[in-house]
Image (cartoon, rainbow, N blue to C red):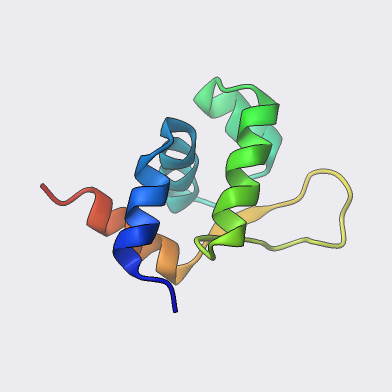
Length: 87
């Protein structure tokens, strides 16, 4: 099992990962929706989603789709986000 503080550090190392995780905490979204809301290039969104998925903070709800996949924050992702917001 990965240390939660490692995950906090991993997310905190990238403003893109932080923004994507926070936005997914509001509601499930596609990469295009994240791009429009966050005003970040789709390539950065895709990389952040891949990295967050690999460490278990985000999951793809529609992996069978080629386009317009829907992503959601996981329980572990919510815990890490809560730890990030602590002073």
